[in-house]
Image (tube, rainbow, N blue to C red; front, side, top):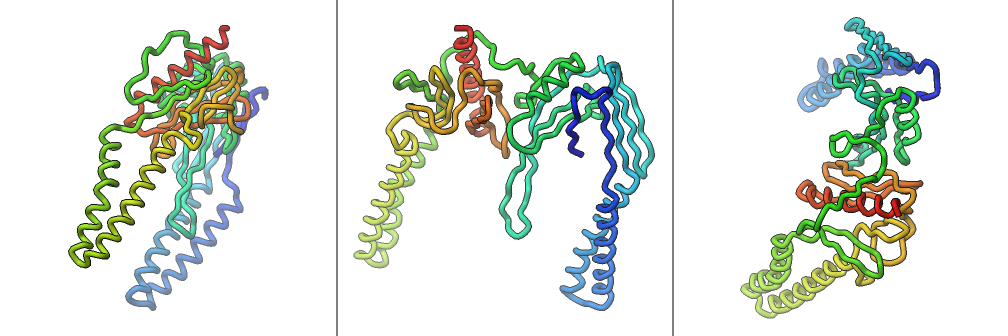
Length: 350
């Protein structure tokens, strides 16, 4: 169920019922597969029975899902005073009403669903933006608008909040905050050790400094690799061992050089999340790249979880920036967010 309700409708109604054609298709597909699997189990043997049992199991799940869908119906009506929900399934009916004043607010959040390709083991993630009317009881939280792509539906978010006269909220790593845009005028103080902050020609770039232990370990690995490989092969054939050691040393130097270039950037300038007087972007210090967010259009600076990692998201206009890190980088990313909000608020006041 992915509603796209109109905040201007009076009253706001949502009716959902599974497509009967889809239910019939599930019954047909599940029944046919189950019948074929049953014949294979009766007349087959060995691996045939094993494979058929697997198909039969998934066919039964498909039939069970179709059975649950056959009498499912969801109806919701929102007026200026209350939310009314009527839910019906084969398990019975569940109707309830809740005064609108008991809701916390209208929340805009994002969710990611992992998807697997049918013919390979590759994984992908589909992002959804969800506007919902949130209650302290999760069972009484109701969806209002779901967007599957593009930028967050901020206009609908604000319109629903205005319609219900409730706060417009956003989720920041699970914590709800009011969606009023950058507004903090309190300096976050000096950056933590993990944050690398550099300024070139009026452009400030924030990055995550490599952890010293991992950096030392990586350098030692590449420096010791030629000796280990060369020494091992030297015991077999001295000439071949020396050649392998030299070739591995050249490869190790190339890898160390590429690591330094990636850290400094091809231009030799600092890289990261960069802020100038006019825009924010991810890249090197200098002129903004093709994708950037103008300062005056920034509408969101928040932390989010993406694919099990943390990211600092900046959105505005038609652009969306995402600066990633790990769970261990949370303190650094939180400081970067606070610093950006402070800088943006100061520029807007000016």
